[in-house]
Length: 88
Image (cartoon, rainbow, N blue to C red; front, side, top):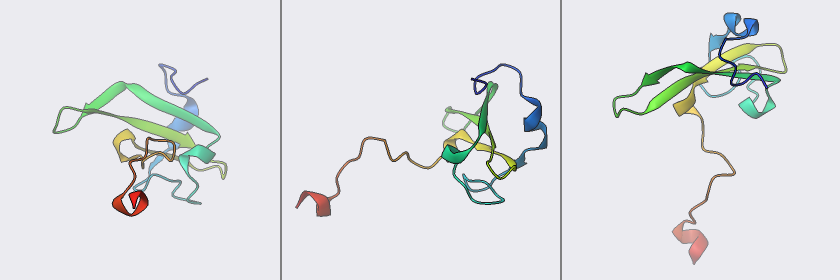
């Protein structure tokens, strides 16, 4: 898997910054990407000292985009806390 390779793949060189966590060309999610590479060698620290990384995606439409790891939307597989409406 190339997602954690220490050297960036050539296809990341043409990536554009996606301001929403989806392909800027066709709006496909990161789960639909054909390739992924995470730049774990150069983390950026936020104001509260948390790390964030650039995540690069090659979309099925051919577009290449990147976004910050902390901009990723919550996973549908994450632990779900029921709201009051769901409890009663």
